[in-house]
Image (cartoon, rainbow, N blue to C red; front, side, top):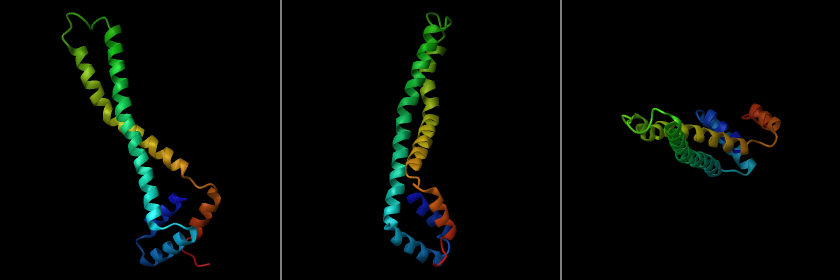
Length: 134
């Protein structure tokens, strides 16, 4: 429901006459601009929390994989030039940003999916008829 009003707000705020119509739509549904803003902030906060979880999980998995490679690779060990040990440092750094982005995207999609309208056909009909006076 909040996504429906956010789409309306973002697409039609350019026209001042549409802002009044948006206000009437929000009042009719029992929401205010602040409610929509709080819901969108909640969606973004949950996505950032998921991204921070990715910042922890991704590098940990990378370290475990590098240690596994060091244990099972016969080239790594005594007499090694240190290249295998450098992977313990570089792999988590290389994985941190992509894991944050992946978990952020998954968290955002999950939050949006949870807030989808219960009746999509009615929401589409509202979007098609939005701005028309009854």
